[in-house]
Image (cartoon, rainbow, N blue to C red; front, side):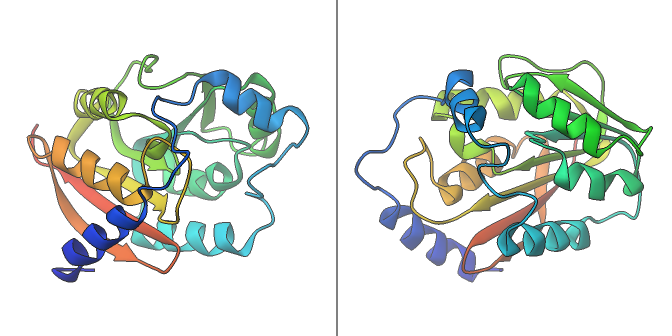
Length: 214
């Protein structure tokens, strides 16, 4: 996905202006409700979409190993468990306590993994990271909160850190589409990161940025 991305993104973004779109960031209660009757409402552990997306995400990582990684929105820890072997330490964030309990259980054999209850961008962990993964998360935010997330990430990067964005590009009722979320993040991060690689399928887009500010 190179120069053609701009035209594709413009078309997809226009098409994503669907009725019923939420206008504000989805709060913690929305996610608690999603998990109230279903332990894996997005089928992270079973869907072919997730399986293929996880494999593509791991393949897109520019480095074979990271010293300190942050996964924003780790959910039940399916991808966390796959990412653990590539990291010295890995911190997963999510907003539902029962979800983090599942993630801890799934990653019980990963002593390098830790988990924290955190609703970004308002809550943010201490520390600096050389990998920050934001997968299927940024479109839950409205534009002001997306800008706050960009600021949080910019202040949490080690020199030459990698930022990975992965988002579904279908029509949603979320505040932003996948394209709007990714393009908004990239635009906001221009002062501290540049696009390293981009990929697009018929279902999702994957953007890798590299920190340019030490």
